[in-house]
Image: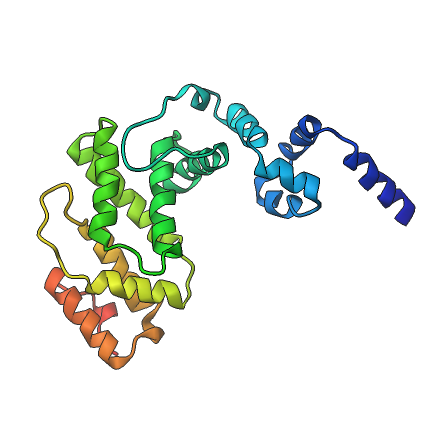
Length: 231
């Protein structure tokens, strides 16, 4: 049995990259990260552009004809484009049409919030997304609505850990900056921030934190849900 397995491994090792790509594209995407760690050749295939270009062409045929867009959020590599298209279809609008730009805005915001040692203020991040959509021809109303959907999707997909707790607390305590529409922060997004703090992260709040966050919530919303009250 061991010799047979070794033989199969050797046979796969002899396959050229274009045939490996055909095999990989038939494997569920949830297993790609594990597959890419099997050996150096397979890792190289996943790091290259060819696999992702082929995956985009097979999954979203019209995406290959889309031109680059103006604005602060770049399109990036084929691997990033695949991630953006996947997010737009399965995370932002499950079962709906893909919008690559929406997916890129999601990736941009999630990376800024998760990877930055000290993320920029939410008003700057929100403004960047708004400017991106307006630069691509979206109306002010559509830009504000899309940005709100993206913020909600990112907040709902953050891991429940200490870093996320500190991030949400910072977002809640930033204060309400007086900005013109559509750059003003969405109340739907702010509500979700406080809701997660008072439910998912309630045990992380010290007494001082609780009353500080509650005070911020009362300055924005009336009435306050009863589930948020009581330390």
